[in-house]
Image (cartoon, rainbow, N blue to C red; front, side):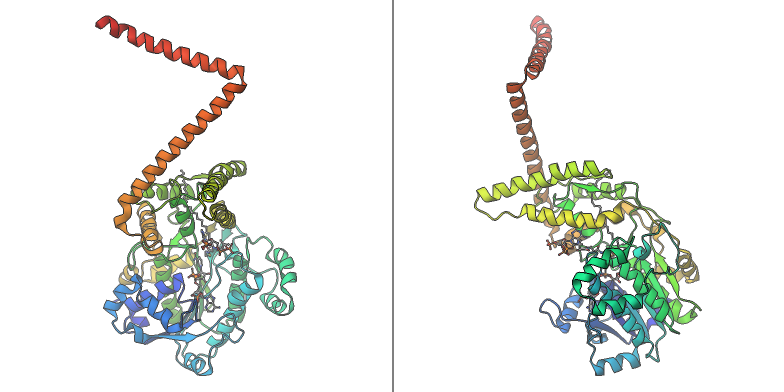
Amino acid sequence: MSTIAAFYGGKSILITGATGFLGKVLMEKLFRTSPDLKVIYILVRPKAGQTLQQRVVQILNSKLFEKVKEVCPNVHEKIRAVYADLNQNDLAISKGDMQELLSCTNIVFHCAATVRFNDHLRHAVQLNVTATQKLLLMASQMPKLEAFIHISTAFSNCNLKHIDEVIYPCPVEPKKIIDSMEWLDDAIIDEITPKLIGDQPNTYTYTKALGEMVVHQEGGNLNIAIVRPSIVGATWQEPFPGWVDNLNGPSGLIIATGKGFLRALRATPMAVADVIPVDIVVNLTLAVGWYTAVQRPKSTLIYHCTSGNLNPCYWGKMGFQVLATFEKIPFERAFRRPNADLTSNTFTTQYWNAVSHWAPAIIYDFYLRLTGRKPRMTKLMNRLLRTVSMLEYFINRSWEWSTCNTEMLMSKLSPEDQRVFNFDVRQLNWLEYIENYVLGIKKYLLKEDMAGIPKAKQHLKRLRNIHYLFNTALLLIAWRLLMARSQMARNVWFFIVSFCYKFLSYFRAPSTLKV
Ligand SMILES: CCCCCCCCCCCCCCCCCCCCCCCCCC(=O)SCCNC(=O)CCNC(=O)[C@H](O)C(C)(C)COP(=O)(O)OP(=O)(O)OC[C@H]1O[C@@H](n2cnc3c(N)ncnc32)[C@H](O)[C@@H]1OP(=O)(O)O
Ligand SMILES: NC(=O)C1=CN([C@@H]2O[C@H](COP(=O)(O)OP(=O)(O)OC[C@H]3O[C@@H](n4cnc5c(N)ncnc54)[C@H](OP(=O)(O)O)[C@@H]3O)[C@@H](O)[C@H]2O)C=CC1
């Protein structure tokens, strides 16, 4: 029997961000391995016209939870959705709910965050810093609390090249930032944001670093640990390979490449693609929860959940494998054939942007206009290239994360726990993982049917023929124009034609002799 699974049995667990990518996989694993847990409280807000209950039902009815429903048939009774909005100062939790949470919770997993790189600083601070502060305050009033696990990111200190499992000081104290957000107006915040974030690339990594500092400063006597995952990708093994349900990290760019929109990317092929499967992150997080509660380490331990130092994959290799997978498993209704280049040269990137992104988009919009339809490709391209520019920082650099605490924890696990809560990234086969990732995007994100693959392949063949035809026509037109204007071009043309003629006559002569 797994010690970790047994530990969560009978426990009341509070999860924030349970409706997010990581939160859902965390909840699934908890129910699957510890079906006898008492209750999982999830802090949820209504969204997109759905009530809390509708959101929970939607999650439970998804493919991700199919196995859980077999192992834990009464799973719906064990989830308690609590209305909360972490954007509000009091978190908008009702008095009754608050009392229940305070008196019953044994473990807190704080996953909620805004992960948007370009979020307004006020909003990012509210969610990633102030809400963390409020949750710590709540946790300090929970008499039965055994551990508080905070999910941060390995990129919270991405202004450094080598990152240890420690909290680095912030140039401005989080408390001062929180205070200033209360009285500064949006325009002034916009103005000072670049100065405040300094050498951090965006408000997300900046506020995640502030969030860690808040945990460090205001954790008091709580039993706290911080997990820092790198770029979280689709599931590796559990509950099944390739599950993913949002565009974050590489997923959006894989779609854009597979659909033929993205044909070139400013990325360093030899930079480490520090992607980590979401089930590895979840297994580590649950092991950390157990260890923190049972061993009660004297200080707050930080765990890096990264792949680069133990089993590195590079952006070049990843791109190559993604393209190879499209040969076998193409996406439907592609705009162009998937074929992209990675280049670290800015000039080449601009050239490819003009030739491979803007030109086809403008031509296609022209065609749409001619056929009486609304042009949309240039707008889409604009958004795509803006997104790409936001991600470029992370695909042109490599970082080194030390993983001493993570390795220490692995060594403390029994062989059974190492199997059930496997977070050994050395066992991951990248080629297989990437193939399953692309397949998972097709199935679970794009919701495309596998039966449509032959048709998608035919569509790509048609696109290839159009591509060849278009290029040939373009070449002929260019040549015709050149011939009309340049004597030199005419001379070259004459030389080529007479050479071909002589070449053919040479072969014709012996064959005529034979006859
Ligand atoms: C041999 C060689 C062969 C070579 C072959 C070459 C082959 C090449 C193969 C290529 C594949 C392999 C390479 C993969 C590279 C991966 C890089 C990953 C780096 C990630 C690092 C993460 C590190 C930090 C990790 C963390 O700790 S954080 C967790 C990660 N956090 C995020 O990933 C948030 C990202 N997003 C945003 O930050 C916001 O989204 C924002 C983007 C600002 C827009 O923001 P905005 O302009 O305001 O507009 P939106 O409305 O948001 O979006 C506007 C529209 O863009 C859509 N869209 C949102 N996102 C994405 C996204 N990703 N990708 C694509 N589209 C996206 C959205 O759907 C909407 O489309 P629509 O619905 O309009 O059609
Ligand atoms: N994805 C990645 O690549 C990485 C993620 N991380 C960290 O992992 C954690 C989880 O990320 P991930 O699952 O990918 O992110 P998602 O964007 O998928 O999920 C974010 C979660 O936070 C919730 N949330 C956001 N705003 C509020 C609010 N005002 N009130 C209540 N809940 C709110 C969302 O709820 P709702 O559904 O209502 O929007 C959602 O459940 C984050 O802390 C992130 O920083 C770290 C490294 C990489």
